[in-house]
Length: 406
Image (tube, helix red, strand yellow):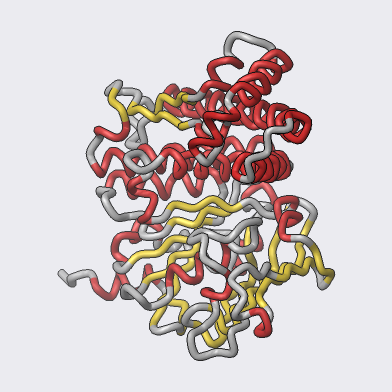
């Protein structure tokens, strides 16, 4: 499918959220690059180190946050450049096509705490406002250890999913984080005046319980979507996951109204001041919760599953989330799938590609071997990436040329 053919499709046959044109300047290994995409999947093929993941990272910066690598903004600049960088995109959104630009000024190149500039249709905006226009979800090789790694990785994973259909979630989470940091500072400074803590602990109770409730709602919604998929396709190679939240606030919310949970949490914070002072941090709250994942058909903890099973569980969660966002926001999120075919056999690869097309999601996928994406020939736009240079190629034609003659 060519870009022009994709654009000729009816509105119901293409996503309403997709990047039409992506431009990079002094970003990672790119001096300058421009890519004209379509609403169909985009496949980036090239050797390791060619710059495939850098393109996905650029797309991830169209959403709030630090992007899929969580890199410091000065680190995104091309090594031999002036320290500044820019990413621009013509993006189709819920409110129509908009121009998004983001980057770092060269004068801030030595400041690791410098924020990035964001402009929407030429007007300066806060990075948080990007959540009103773009939802982006990614799977990277680093996430292969999600189920065996730290609880903070799983919390961050869940929180990023929630942001796609609740852009205001970040505001509450930031308010909790700031209040907790201020409380920790008072504890570290040896303050014992109760009045100095009460306002902060009240804010932590209100926002902390709201965070726990939103997470519980998201987990329940994801579980419902996965149950539907199992009913629709009992033999899906992406098994349903049993999900649970582990934490004191989550346990309290299962049996008590939110207002009572707030009172209980505030009391625990008040009673735990000396304990937290000794520990040097707050030991109770949503920042300590964990997302527990199990392979539902096997009733096995995800951390004990094989590498292939863990990858299938992770992709199943992402697909369920994309479907949930599509229902709530009337468009699937943009999917960034870095080296996604690793650990997937041919059946799972085909099933993944079918799901992407069914969801009408613009998915950006990378790999070293175009043959791994052969199922998408004629259904996706293929790009060859070589040392920061991009070229479009016809995967179907190349497959035909490589096929043995009779």
